[in-house]
Image 1 (cartoon, one colour):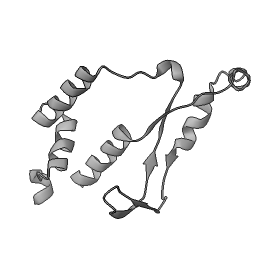
Image 2 (image 1 turned 30 degrees about the horizontal axis):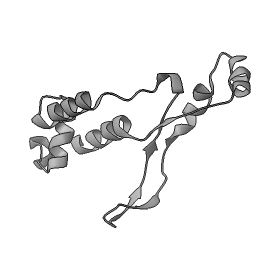
Image 3 (image 1 turned 90 degrees about the vertical axis):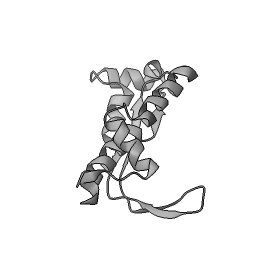
Length: 117
């Protein structure tokens, strides 16, 4: 049960992120309903029960069951500085990142006590 929760949190937080760029005409049409193009397509970005075959770079096959794609407007996209990214990852793998620490332990192959019993 704990592993399923970890998988769900990980997929929601670390799924693919995309930038949706729409023409001025599309944004104007969406704006008439107090929406943006991103608001319009966001409900369709949670795909469930895909059962799609996928191969990793290492040629390992598995089936993709669920996929959440995060969609953002270009004005809200940014890339953090490399030093900030390195510090964030280092904190996660040191174990002082809360829920991220559990994910890092899982990636390192360290079983959590509640998962082994």
